[in-house]
Length: 157
Picture 1 (cartoon, rainbow, N blue to C red):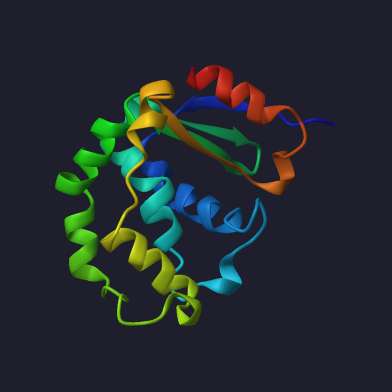
Picture 2: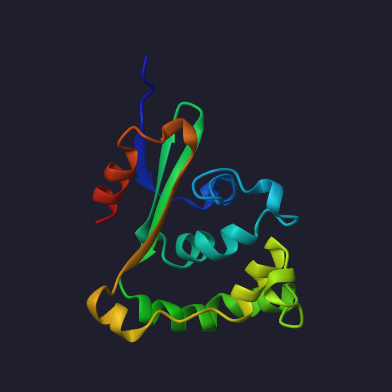
């Protein structure tokens, strides 16, 4: 029997589950937990700033076992990237060392994410001019391949 699925707005109490989902789906939709020492690094980049700074554009999907996915994003990527520089990256930059002195091929997964925090790559203006919005969507395997992603995207739009 299929469990009831609820798509709803993100609530602050959902943040730990969203961090866990970001890690559990961070390897091309599969579990990336074996790659990271710090289990929150992926979430610091791909869910937390969106959910905490722009919660009206963050949704979660929940089933009988709890939160199983999210979609979060922004309607204006260029403005968002500037906001991250002021409101998100500074605290993380003081928490995580800049691994620039480690050659990229020698960096651990944690160091690659820390590098992203210290040196985010701006989205090219040609891209944001044509596609101003962007989002991140992650769904745990128990709800994958069931049309939930399409429903989340429709709800987000």
